[in-house]
Image (tube, rainbow, N blue to C red; front, top):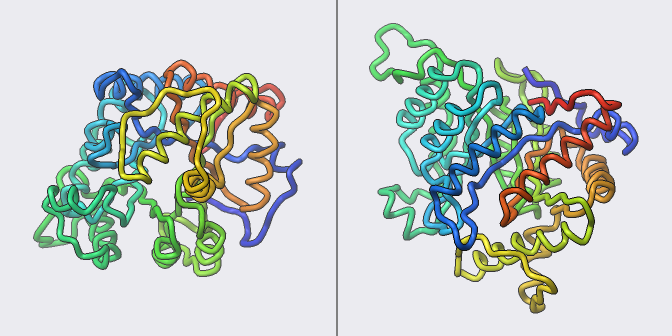
Amino acid sequence: MHSGPKAGAHPPCRAILSRMIPISILDLAPIPEGSDAGVALRNSLDLAQHAERLGYRRYWMAEHHNLPGIASAATAVALAHVAAGTKTITIGAGGVMLPNHAPLIIAEQFGTLAALHPGRVELALGRAPGSDQITARAMRRTLSGGDDFPNDVVELMHYFQPPEPNQAVVAVPGAGLNVPIWILGSSTYGAQLAAMLGLPYGFASHFAPGMMMDAIAIYRQRFRPSAQLDKPHVMLGLNLVAADTDEEARFLFTSTQQSFLNIRRGRPAKLPAPVEGLRIDAYGQAMLDDALACAIHGGPDKVRRELAAFAERTGADAFMVTSNIHEHAKRKRSFEILAELQGHANNGTTPQFAG
């Protein structure tokens, strides 16, 4: 079981730095300008192997559709590729957009992963389609507005339990594997559901931070212990670009800024190359201020300070970091710097990013 801090407990920055909030990786399998999906997915495996060597313990991929800059649409397939090339790191979906799928299909997919890689697989579930409505229809999805999401989550969880006598439908593989479930959200809806079911909760503060504090408070106040989890456990998404200097990080971060503007303006594209002196109009800046309010970019000292401040403000139990950096080597370096910060907080010992 996970254990989280008591509701409202916000340790001071110095204490947070001494233990360092556990950091996991959310890989959106970015497809940079001038590249393709095959390269992006091979880069994902390379990043996961790199993260495993650095001591990270959790690596997630996310379901998105009809976005030219993201290669992880077939999330279970992409995770199988990564899991086969790694040994110890926990792999999972962050998340699968459950309204797009029959719960049985997801149980079978992640049951297969769990059967092949025992103890290394987990599954986070979201209520949004991960696409526009036209694309959702192309997936033959019933556009119910997510009203069936709670029932679908419960049904999926049931498929991972040992089969009952005379059970009509059994997930094979899947039954009895107890794949850990998370609930994801960008509003208070997911917080309420996660609390009711006693599940760990991940909030999408990396792109929709507006309701973050309300969602955290509701989740912690209403949490009911379950067989999976005895105390509330909150993981917050972060867009983070670390580099050797503040100036380099600011430059690399312009790829993320351009990508968000392209998506928000209805012109999704491959991940743009960074640009010097990026000029953004007032309307675009307002969109970025909203979507990237929690983003962090900088050299090691700046990243350390801002991570500590964010941890103090939110009382987070864990962070889920995504770094959409155009150059793969620079993306790997970003996660190296985070590992170095963790090593320093552990007085130079081997960094371990707990689950």
